[in-house]
Image (tube, rainbow, N blue to C red):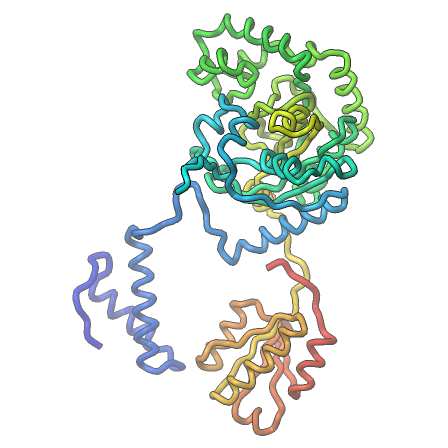
Length: 474
């Protein structure tokens, strides 16, 4: 085997030592061994050097080993939402830019700094979806859902995009589970929305969480509170961070949402929104707490909680791990009674929440929650010879038509195929060779027990029909 000069990261000696190790794999011919060696050597070179293409900053690849977490979370989200009467909705990944300017607010960080906005070839300004609520509101209006019996309960699982500084649990391309309830102003629906998010998190095993709630009033009483907040902050203008100096003039309520440490003492002593509520808002606030208590969910009143979007009114809430506050919110939401009218629809109350699926999975891993369930029936066909391969393809196809998992192993030696079956988490392997083809008796091996038996083609199909060892996530 000829050897030419290679990258300096590996010496000639290392190169040949690696070849000597791989060449001991007796089940492969020389051509296959050379291919394996070069793939492995090239792979180590790629790991050592900077690749030309990598996932964009702030994005992640969900590899096969992590798919089970995503299935677990998404399946649980759907089950919990549907148990409360919510139905799934999917909306486009991009919308008219003005939808987000009018809904989220042009002075919010999301619109000012974080949206991915572009002009298409027709000259229209479009924005990749930064959050789910605005799109669902648009769909509710466009499709005349206000004519349906109210409340309309909807949930979604969708990718979103924000140009944020990547950090733990925060990405530029991320996924959300959220719900929206339209057409009901009674605070029982507020308690229900909060309970959906709480029940989902506890259902996936995240139970070391705390709930914080607040009321920021509505368009009738909030202006007085904003005036009081602005007057209070004027006294501290010299000690505020640059963003808060700007917010003091453009969006005073967002002053309470600042995450900068130097601004926290000012926030903690700020006027409380609940002290400025009008009678209807105060009654709504009191009833919400009463309804929450009937659910058995404990809560803390946090007068600094306002959320980061302009469309919220009355109820706002967040759910966090107990030792963390603003920096690692798992779920958050609130009421937005004026949003649909603001978007051109009829005056319709609404409330909802959103939570990042990546952050949920991060907490599942943090708590080392065992999400595995019973393994499923998964049959791999190991074959030796062309005739055996054709029979394996035929039987595997018949098994899949029965709704079960089956696939054909790689065209390599039997030992290599068995290792591949183990890697693929197969529950059983059916071995077919020339002898098995001539007798019509194949070998069925149970990988979990290590035993095996002879079985006919019809017996294989009967086995599949009568044996199902459950469903697993991965």
